[in-house]
Length: 251
Image (cartoon, rainbow, N blue to C red; front, side, top):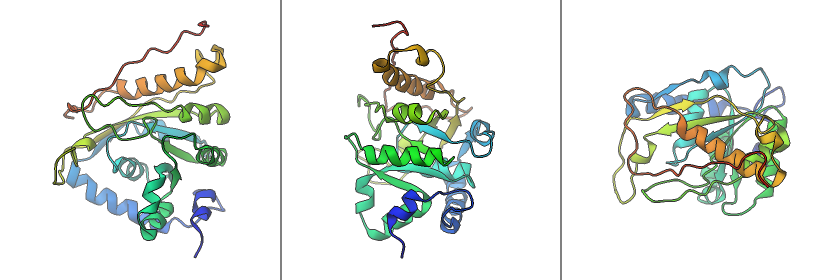
């Protein structure tokens, strides 16, 4: 049996990719189950599907539920997506960690500068893959919770110069609300935004010590500026701060 690192460090696309049979089967089942269960809809997938063949990109999304990656991955199948997942998830049970690796998830140590995960992400992008990242780092589950926007997405984007595609998800925070014992089936929707690059202005002209912070905040703004799909109930139990990046000429 191949070690987990084989799946983390072997391409999920191209001629030398590892087999995707389990991933394809699993995501088909997820799509079949999620569509009627959550009345699942999405809009503007074209921002990902219209990328040139072999064009890598970072998919940056808000984070409300452990199920968020599954909604994104099932919606973009058969395009393989590599998602950062918290290291603790890979320690629950060997069978769970192996299935997660088969699907394309790889571990990251939260609340640290996990350079091994950053370097792994860079290698994936240089191979032309799609990498999913939650810049908020952890789920935003209740009103008043202040998200910490980690700058890993900006660091990786700067090294690889790939586009970052904002994604917003609505509804998943109500699937298993904080303090509730039972699973719920709210409407879930997802919208993709237009890509942006850290090598574009105004970021390219900013001092290096400001560029990553400003780009991260702009990515988060782009995520939360995405308009909900018609009929999408807005989340009322979370609050999102509004940021203003420093001007290009600031010292």
